[in-house]
Image (spheres, rainbow, N blue to C red):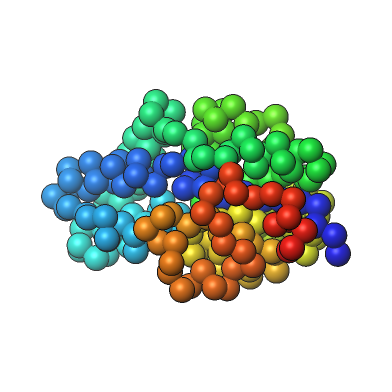
Length: 218
């Protein structure tokens, strides 16, 4: 089956937002009397906001009466940070134009709340080519479950076997592979040599590196 659809994750892949998520979460958790370091943050990369907050509330035995407000505060703060200081990842324009030129259907499948996904898409100025947007935030299951990728493919009227997924997190990679999609990972430099990426169909260091030769090799 010919590949004719591409679905992108968003955070960490299209925009360098992981440090901003960390900063926002650090600020909110600090108000609750808890400090998180970078190593701890890496343990929950790719989880939905509610799952991330619940994880650390349970870990630090915080009062769950404050969980929903902490979640909302983190989302509001990270939205502000992304739309005021966020930087696109290298190659965003290149990768979109590459697939536009080849008439691929284009979607986004993110773990972030839909409000944040839309705010980020508008901030990056990439709404025009995006034909489907799915958020796992309110779905029954988030990544690594395949639901968000399957729903995005359905909206694009594509078989999962026609789809290329681009991911930067291991949970996202598992989600795309569980959906039976071809998956290309673009890990952070600090995680590039992690052996877990071996289950991906391809690993590249930047979206800028993707080209016709690599597409034809899939």
